Length: 161
Image (tube, rainbow, N blue to C red; front, side, top):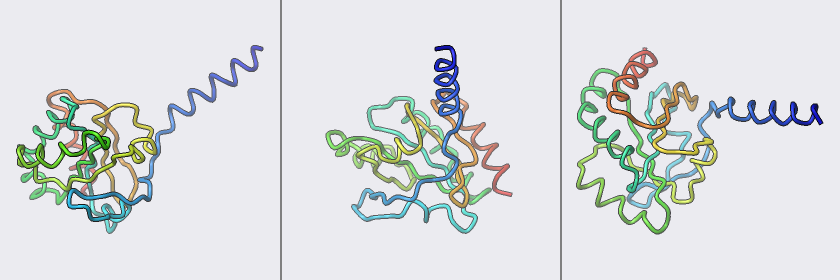
């Protein structure tokens, strides 16, 4: 019995500690209904921020609002690109376009209405922010508190060299 408990705990801890370190190869929809291959967004040394968010998630919107204020500077200084991937389901996805328009976000917006990407990234909660280059996940942060965008920018500077 002790061996079974030890084995269970070992498997549980190891499955929690190994977050996926590669961006899954999957097709996503843009707000305009076009398809995009996820693996194509970070190739050729393009550094990208991926933010999983939803219209009903207040911390998600707060994070994207905070980044929006400094996003042009980030692009000028590091050439980073942000993809805001909505995990709104089929009932709430119709709110995405009006919210993005109203906020004036200049991000690329993708849709993950079935939460396939969210599941593949083992993301139990949102917001989830990733920093990706050549499809490798270099940085991962869950949740949002004011100022987290500054830490993200430090990582962007570190990996944009």
